[in-house]
Figure 1: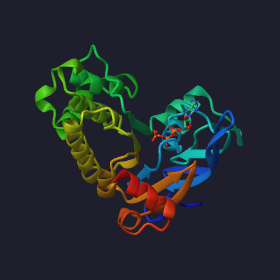
Figure 2 (figure 1 turned 180 degrees about the horizontal axis):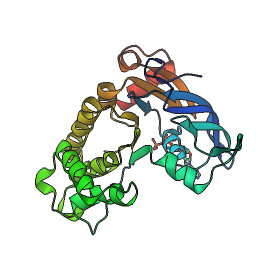
Figure 3 (figure 1 turned 120 degrees about the vertical axis):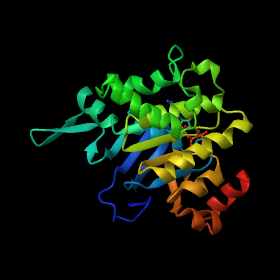
Length: 265
Ligand SMILES: Nc1ncnc2c1ncn2[C@@H]1O[C@H](COP(=O)(O)OP(=O)(O)OP(=O)(O)O)[C@@H](O)[C@H]1O
């Protein structure tokens, strides 16, 4: 399905592009000749049954795994290759590091630095990876900590926070790197049910109040409906259909989508 994702091009060239991407683990083909694009400032959500390949897409973007076939570009740069003397050669570490700076990720597990307070968790990478001064990084961090509603907890360690609060710190930490695209992988699935709404509200806020591009894997259909410009329904490593949420949830075209939506209601 070439050009799936948000098909509108008025916001310039695509930020993420998967072209004929196949990924296998042994005998299992997890992604099968996949093509889609995500355009700047759009929010694209991946839904579908367990094992359909959604998380693998995010892992490919994070360069945690490599495609067997096809190309992936982020902001026009190849993820697995770089151009040298007019030729595409396998990407070196420096190239991968530079492309990875464009991508922020929030995982199911928050992975905060346990020995650092909230503020330092958010300033650490901007200082050490981007080279910001401590003052610049702190100013940026304070704004983001306010955005995720944790100003009063700025001097606490992660263990002094609830899971939902820790996940909100993880969101601030990812945004502090000013990535071009934010990847979210089932960010509420490790949380107690009563903490889910607070984290989703923060992400709704981020989606609506910033210009960041988002690619989310979620089982929270109402969240997908609220934030997405485009929802992509996956099954067996392929896109079954991709459409704006009002269409995909209100009038799905494919039986597979209808069955899946019924199963998660
Ligand atoms: N490193 C790996 N080695 C072997 N198989 C893997 C590996 N990573 C993923 N898989 C397999 O690839 C398939 C797709 O996994 P993936 O995590 O992308 O699915 P998903 O759609 O995100 O599922 P879920 O909704 O349960 O998270 C699964 O069958 C999984 O077992």
